[in-house]
Length: 158
Image (tube, rainbow, N blue to C red; front, side, top):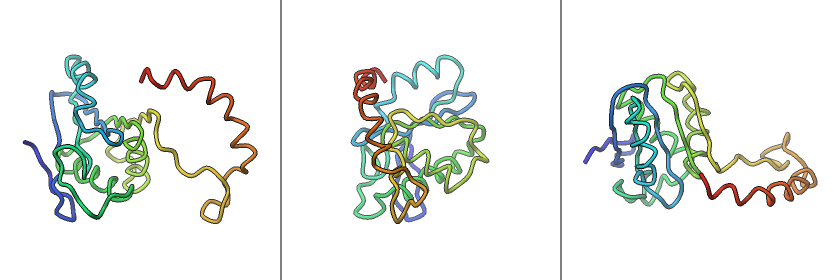
């Protein structure tokens, strides 16, 4: 099994197939890298290098008591991209994996990133509050609920 060691010593499992521009997949909770196998096969057959990891506490990665937060997930993703020396990578994240990709870019920048794709991602806090004074008021948030409900059936096709 392919593993990298995160900065706190946690062992992180990953798959790395093919050659070409790297596409890095970050899975949703409670899945593993295996959730991306169909997409990895499709893109790998078309000339991309495809990488997916099991987030700490998931799949074949080490089960940890600490570090189960977005900052650590982002740092683990940074350790993976550094260990594999990925350049011009396309990062794809679904659900929690989307939050992981967004936090990775926020914490570590875009030096190694060509593009980011967030699918049904865990969004940042959007409501106005002490931690987010520029956020939107509750009324503007709830105003979009009917539109979200009307299109929710489409999310199952991702």
